[in-house]
Amino acid sequence: MVFDKSLDKELFSEKVEFERSVITIAVMSYNEGVPKLQLSRENKNAAGELGFAKLGRMTKEEVEAVLPLIEKAKKYL
Image: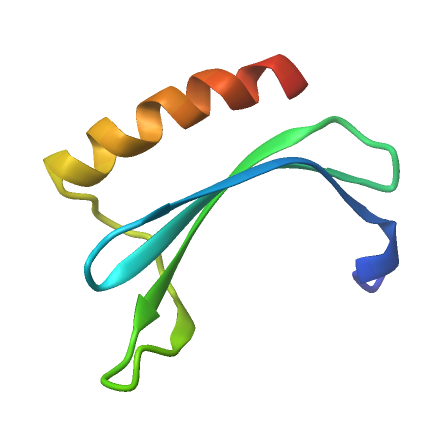
């Protein structure tokens, strides 16, 4: 089965902006399935443009900023 973007529904999404990146906390439901939490990072290049990056590890500042958003997102799970 191939992923169909039109079946992916965003139930919640908020972003936190940092000096060199943006972290997005979202709740997504694919094909009316179980809602799931999604965390993603976009890094800024020298021109300030955003590009997708693996989230991987987070600094303490990032964790402290996203935890309240994760709490908000739980209402949509």
